[in-house]
Every structure is written in C-alpha cells, then in structure tokens.
Amino acid sequence: MPETIKNYINGEWVDASQGKTFECCNPADHREVLGLIPDSDSDDIDKAVSAARAAFPAWRDTPAPKRGEVLYRVAEILVKRKKELGELCCREMGKVIAESLGDVQEAIDMAYYMAGEGRRLQGETIPSELPCKDAKSVRVPVGVFAQITPWNFPTAIPIWKLAPAILCGNTVVFKPSEESPVCATRLVEIFEEAGLPPGVLNLVHGFGESAGDPLVRHPEVDGVSFTGSNAVGEQLAVICATQHKEFMMETGGKNPIIIMDDANLELAVEGALWGAFGTTGQRCTAASRLIIQDGIYDVFLKSFTEKATKITIGNGLNTKNQMGPIISTEQYEKVLSYIEIGQKEGATLHLGGNAYKEGDCAHGTFIEPTIFTNVKPDMRIAQEEIFGPVVSIIRASDLGMAIEIANDIQFGLSAAIYSQDVNQTAIAERDLDAGLVYINASTIGAEIQLPFGGTKHTGAGPREAGGRGGALDLYTKWKIIYRDFSGRLQKAQIDD
Image (cartoon, rainbow, N blue to C red; front, side):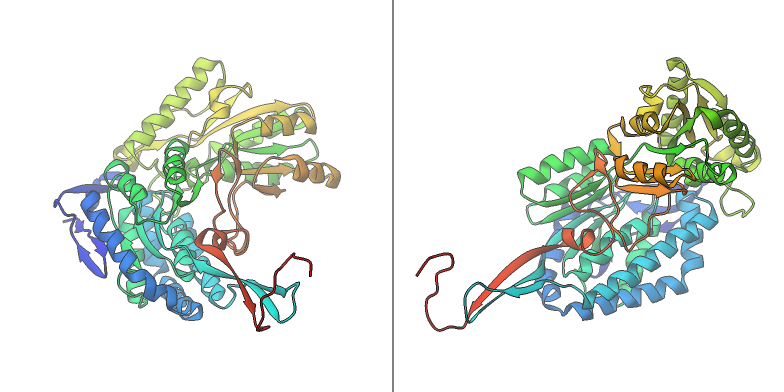
C-alpha cells in the first residue's frame, strides 16, 4: 500500500480540508505509487497562513544564533539520513542515485552554511554627521513567506529557500511541486525533529491553481519565493507587484557552452556530456546549446557522439545507469514534441530522438540522449527551454560570433567556455550575459556560498543561496536606526 502523506499545519499532520488526494508515482516505473498526496485548496492555505502569522512574533524575537542552532540540528539529521533520502529522491524524481545523493549533500551544505549566518547577520554602524548621535542599520525579517519549489531538486532547492527564510526570523508556508511531495514531507519531518516551533514552517501539498495561486494571493503573505516555469513566474510577479509583496523567481535557462579550437578536447567533451545529459537535461543550468568553433567542430562532434551513444539509460537505483527518466508523462510528451519541432525547422537529428522502452524502461518515461546538428541560432530548439536530454550544436567562426550567439536568447542563467587562451576566457568572462560563468567547466556546478541566479527572463528579485547579495537580501529588510543622546534638538543638513 502507498504511504498516506499529510499536510503539516501549526505543528500537526493533517489531511486536506476536502479529503481529496492524488497519487505520486515513480517516473522510472509508473506502477510504483509512492504516496497518496493531499489535494489542498484555499481553506488549507488559510489555515497554514494563519498559523505562520501567529507564530511570527515569537520566532522573530528568538535570537538569530538560536534560530541557527535549529538549522545545525537539521543538517546533522540530514547527514544521518543521506542514503535514505537519496534513494527516495531517486525513486520520486528519477535522477540517478549518485546525483540524488548529491541533491541531499547540497541540502546538508546549505543547512550548515545558513546555520552559521545566525551569528553573522551583519548590518553597519557608521559615523553620524552630528555630535552625540550614532547611526546603524540592522536586518529584520520580512514576515510570512510563501515558498513554491520545483521537482528537479526535491531536497536541495527547498533547503535553499527554507533555511535562510527561517534563519532570518520569517515564518513559512511551503508548497512543493506535486511531482515530488514525499521528499518535501521527509524534509519537513526533519525540521520538526530538529525542534522548530509549531507554525514556523507549514507544509501544504497540492496543485498550482488550487493551492499555489491562493497562497501567493493571500493578503497575510508578505513575500514569495518561486522556482519553476517562466510563464508561471511572470504571472506571480504581477500579482506580487500589485500587492507590494517581496518577490523572487528563478525560472530557467537556455545555457551555452562555447568550445574554442584550442580547447582541451577530452575535458570539453566530458563537460558537454555532463551539462547536456546530467539529470536527463532536467536542470535549469543544463547545457542545451553547444557553440563549437569551426576548427574543432568535426573532431568534437565525433567524440561527443560516440560517448553519448554509450550512456546507459534506466532506473537510477541501478548504479550502472547514467541517465534516468523524464519526470512525468506531460514533460515526456513536451520533450518529444520539441524533437519533432527541431526536425520540422530543418535541423538534422544526429542522434537519438526516440522514446526508450528497452527492458526495465518499458513502464517509465525515458527518452534517448538526443543531438541536433545544423542548428540555426534562431530556431525554437535553440531558443526555448526544453528541459530534457536534447542538445543543439551550433557552429561559430570565432569568439565574437560565439558570444553573440550565446547571448542572443531571452535567458541568462549559466554559460561556459572551454579554451586554453587566458585572453579569450577573460573576454568571455566579461561579455557573456549570464549570472553564472564557468571557465573550462560545464554550466553545472554552482556552490551554495555564492548567490545563484541569472539575467534577463531567467529571474527577478534577489538571488538564491549565498549570504550578502543573495538569500539574506530576500529574507530580510533593512531598518535604519538613529540615536541622538545629545539632549538637544539637532537638525541634520540644516546650517546653524
């Protein structure tokens, strides 16, 4: 029997108000039902937001180092349960076990890092222009945050949001993706075990229209953090702007790897394979465009193709497999439709392009590693995020042309260049319009101690992760304090 999953509101595990549920299945084998999930609505959202609002004053007034101690305990529990959580991630999301364990490790790293911020929530103390007066800035929490997360990093991305929000003194209503609700539940159970007070973190499962939309629109929600599709993110941005809510979104990418004639070929091929087909291409930082200089094009394509044909596909719990399934039937059909679009646009289907149903894959949503050549930069497959194991290869005559192609998209999340020429890499570092730039490395590999996010349509608002310049700027607001101890009226900027 599948596990019955519940919402978590004000420290209690409860069913959805209407008693409705939906199934969550293993994308590698749809016959395996992992859980019966609450199909929540606005009534459940109201209860969760009310709990978060009631818990806010006491949590806000809890000293930040004490809030950090809860995150230390979360990190310690995550360490102990890493194998269990990694296997669950593999079964629920589909990524291979090595990547699933990496997902949990990233959550561990973020929990430890943000716990330390409990003793580093610095403001500034600066000189006043007047005698017997001091001036300082302090960070204070925003209030109640709505946090909506995607399915592709079901442990890491929630911790990216939960840890800094809670550390900074906010309370949270967490609405995870309906595709990865069991991982989200395990994570909230860990916060509960770590001693987080009731109401500080509330979990409401459900779908975007019935649970996510009323959560974002709720008048008692002060801020929204969203990771997901660009279309949904832009709708939420409008709602938050009209209601004066704090808002952050990270909504995807169409990330390029530039490979120059002087690149280390073996290193570039390995980086391109990891970027294109790691996590089955289901990363916002996936390298879905390879921009290859003419002189190395043929030898690169030959080696890249040979290695792509050797990628083993199947259930990620089998350590021999290198690529797992597409998350859902809907996403599976979307990826296959883009493969058809690419062919109709005139690109050459160089490798793959088919559903994969061999052996144990017959009951899952698997697609072969797919390579398109003769791709023009303005084709849809080179402009739109596909979120699957599909890569477009584009020729460039020189670095200037490569950078122009790389930048000529609506997204600007991650970009990479392979070259042994320090001057070329310096130019690329300066001119690539992306939030993350990698030199002689793939487009994947961001670290939690630096902000994560991009330019253009990739996102809006403060960035994820990191400290200053990142998550702390989303989950706190500045309060400026002037204290005059002169005992007389002093008028700043007014001549005596």
